[in-house]
Picture 1: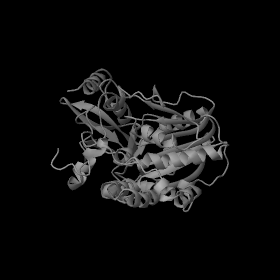
Picture 2 (picture 1 turned 135 degrees about the horizontal axis):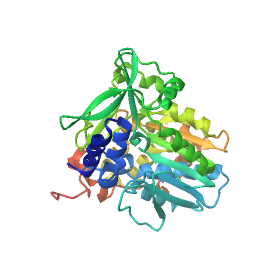
Picture 3 (picture 1 turned 180 degrees about the vertical axis):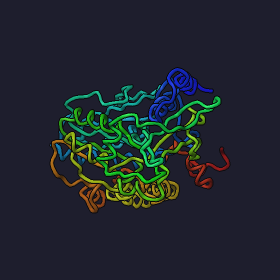
Picture 4 (picture 1 turned 135 degrees about the vertical axis):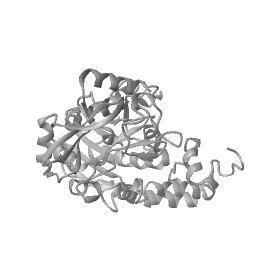
Length: 401
């Protein structure tokens, strides 16, 4: 039994049942919690993220950030705050590509709770879960952050709205139902227009509002770019999701048994993008657009990178080309959603949100030989080894393991 589970059991013995949100908070972020003590990305971890699949993801993000810099009047510095930066893979890829985009003046701040964050002269690391900044002109971005926020879960039982709690029964962690723990939960359901059916379960993420408020307070002028998996409210109410969307991940296997392996598995739920948009308006964050990751990366020119690679470096094309396509597969990462909100910017046309946008046109008009195409490196080997065993790094690695 790990430290996180010991703490939760001690809390239950002292206080009785706790909300699912508090259980998740302790299991993920408390002492011995998943995000404070465990490596988690890649084949040796519990899930893959887009930056771990191919560095072109960071390159395309850098292109979108550079366009934002231009739209804001080329401020110096242009501040990028990545929240939940994890192992720094995305940060390094963005900064690496941005360094070739002179005179793009970039100040990159990466925040996370994880211990042992890497040192990099071009990336400023801050151990933080929030956005303790002011007067930022630039962009706050996150990739798979909001889905990790603790959530309350409510259900309709016997004609009454009840909340899911965690308790101890015969020395086992179990779910029990109780009274709704906060009036804010009822307010959330009402604002979202959610009317529960008997037996239906719905997640309520109360942490989204203070997070958005903090981002809005940090931004003087600029953008909030959020990438995650989730849906709009009408899709979250579909019949296939009547049992709720909370799931655990360990070694790439999803499970609904989230009360097991406490602190040793990820716990996540689908993001309600309707809530992000609605609450964003409350704090002065205007929606610029919401698209799938497939559309976002395609709009920015992913296929232009693939075409250039085929001409520049044919021997590396197949491994890199397939990894690039993994980023936009409809049944996988391509189904993630990309939401861009802004503060004190006004309506603008962003390439990631618009087919045939300026950045894609700029790439297409560049001579193929001059387009800097990032390539897979040794850090991506586990993903390729698992999915494409005949394409191990390096290209001619023979029988090496």
